[in-house]
Length: 435
Length: 183
Image (tube, rainbow over all chains, first blue to last red; front, top):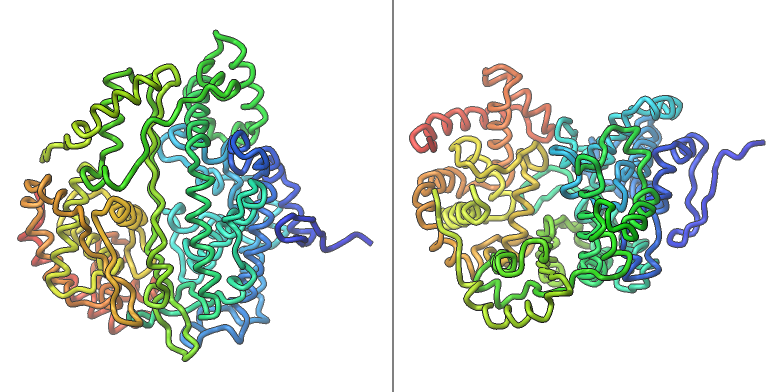
């Protein structure tokens, strides 16, 4: 007899299980493509172990989404004030949304471009991002019969996969918002839980680990009573607070140690410069068939070729990656300069471009999204309180923000001397107020 | 509007809300900014969708975080069990001074929303801002009843009487706002 439940070995979750209908999604061409998209782009050039792919991350997100769903819909865990929005435990709707959620979690990264985020910015036409491609793939003819067999609506899968922030044309019910938060939410999104654990494991950076079993076990749907509101949102029971703190600190450390390591960031910039030069119109394709045919493999092969051939478009950025001749760090954000001018890095970048030429300088900037982590906590005495009132740690988790200015190795010494002499003058010049 | 000009306007909205007694949590700032942009026509260019507690902008949420990272905003603890207030940060004066012409131009708008919303809690702000969202995005006719029904449909936890009341308040605010709208 054919197996109905399939098991996949996984270094983070041991076993990931899925049934035959779900496996058809796994076996589809768009999902299999994720075997050839690195989770962390060229990070393996800095952390050699970080060669894992979007494929296994997506499986992990599906596994955790199912676990979180089972916890928040368990009858004993449902707060009385929100009982009307959660489908009854033995109902068709309960099973329907469980399946939709797991499939949305599995497919949430299907639109990723080669080398994940590294190539996304500036390489897609206006109005496009990987989430829009994800929506298109989920709703494509290619996936239609699979959803039909699973008896789920593709639009429900698309909505939960990308959430209201990225699916602006859709109206979300409170229930759909909650389910999408289980995948992509800021506080308890399982996407983040899996990537922190997985990236930490593969890169060999221990900071990303936290007690996610405990955290998932304590997730609850709660109203923000302390704000006089009955709107439901994801929160936790008091017993999960330390796990939540630990995850949010893990995120901070992983960003600072791994995701925003300055050498990893300059490789992303060189890769983007290469793709801009190589791609015929400077953009990655958004037509589905073309998108699905392009993976890290095709880009890597062309990058190697370009590095060897001086006449190849994008030869210079390609050789910088392949021969490790990347630009060097000249300046990074620091509190002293910021207090004098919040745009100090931009001012230094402009001045460096004027002095050494635009082609020899690169600027990279990132500021964390949504950091006021104010979620409800169900206190042991039955009160619902703000996480910010309950946790000194959460209040003090630093915001991730980086500004890096890189200079061609050829000008490094000159540029460092120039910056030493001119830094104060540059950062005290400010933008005019023009109405 | 350039980014730091926009930050200066946000600082002004937050200061005015605080002066009128608002808790100034993120929800308060979100809803006040929605009115400043969509009703009073201050060109802040945030993208609002219907989400938590009514109209919500992820861009604005990100900008608040970025302003905290740049010392333009800070958090102030409030008594248990409440969440924190968002307050001007140590570098806020510098930006206000730098963009004093911008602030002068949009001062009436910042004062208007602070006057209307400074004393409102999250639940009331949710109802009123959702009422404005339903009124501006249309599609349900202009009557009080049809808009109230739509609010209840979008936010089932808002009962129909409260939704009706919110629509009437919004109609009143729209009338008064004509005096301070940016042209």
